[in-house]
Amino acid sequence: MGKKRCFNGIVWGIIKALAKAESTSKKTAGAPLPLAAWLFIVAVVVAVGIAAAGGMPLPFMIGEVAALLSIAALFFVALRTSKRRSVAELASGGQGEIKSIMGAIEDSLIMYGGDFRISFFNHAAEKLFGIDASAAIGHVLSPRDAESSGGWRTLAQVIFPSLAPRVVPKSAEGEVPQVADVSLTDPELELRISTAPVADENGRTIAFVKIIRDRTPQISALRSKDEFVTVASHQLRGPVTDINWALQSLTQAQELNETDKMIAQTAAAASQNLLARIEDLLSIAKMEDGQMGYSFESTDLLQYVNGVLAGVLPAARKAGVKIYLDRPSGELPMVMIDPKRLSIALTNILENAIRYNVENGEITVKVDRLQDKPYLVVSVRDTGIGIPPESVAKLFSKFYRANNAVKAQTEGSGLGLYMAKGIVEAHGGQIWAESELGRGTTISLAIPTDPNLVPKHEVSAADLF
Image (cartoon, rainbow, N blue to C red; front, side):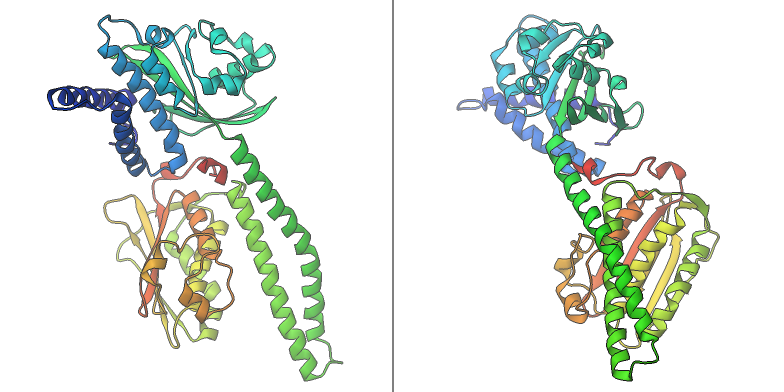
């Protein structure tokens, strides 16, 4: 099931499955499974299928499954009624089966016709907008409702997102459902809205459904955490910079004896290391807030990687590690990258390959095409200590360090590969690891050659809720 497959087609597939299941259950001994049980089974299958195909985080999928179940339930009940009434009539008619299903949905669900007359308004919507369903159902919405006060103003901004202060589309034009993040100021709300047309058996659009998820508590908590990290890091950076400058000056002082100079050099190195950790935290806060500020340009990736390697060669020589560049046999297409940001990711990977290598070890960097896909792959293979199998999947998690890495190098923040993952994904790419304990590790990152695969907007941590 592809991400762009017709939403209504998926819904009708669910309906057919439910109808077949009920028909089969009637032919067998014992009581048939209730509709809610079949809906739950189908929900699990749909959630797993869409999540796997779309590669999107689970919180996003919850809303989509809710929309699928809601529309499927309405249609299924419509098919089971003897009279051919419209979905809107059924929704507003107070059918007990529909009400029980809709009552289990935590997100707000609103259904309205082509004339914007509301035909369904569930309990969650009543709580979110402060409007009773009895007052909402039958009301014809218009942009003029945005001039009202209270819940009607908020509801108008949801139904007509162009009236909202901030709207960030989350789905491509023409995709169904249409998904957008809407930020409101009065009251302050962070909403994710999924909109899908409802069609009859002949494919004619007879209504629209909106699923509104209130993400305000999660976003507020996330922003508070990010603000704390940013403020604390900024407050620390100034004093640590001054301390570092003073210690660097002391290492050059002629008045100090060799012992005092060694103490000053050790303190200066520790101060420099602390300053690097603070800079990492600030960069992580910017990345998670979607504020890194990428500036993409067409680049020869092979030449670019060669330049990054030149920057880490001194550290490699000091560690006694040799670095080789495995050049491709043919010409490579240009790629769109932010040289400054991608350099952070690639440097972090190379520094790990140096730090966790063995004595007289080697690093081989290869740049080549990804077979049958519009990507170039940069792979960094080392002859180091390797990673335990149970740790490979956690390697790109924030603050994570494998047990053998901690034993080999006590210092380390566990932020380097997490940051690299975020930067690569902001380029529309992917990053992964392969390793054999005691034999070495290969970190690979794929960068798209098709500019259309590069995200148009930065993704923040808030987008994962």
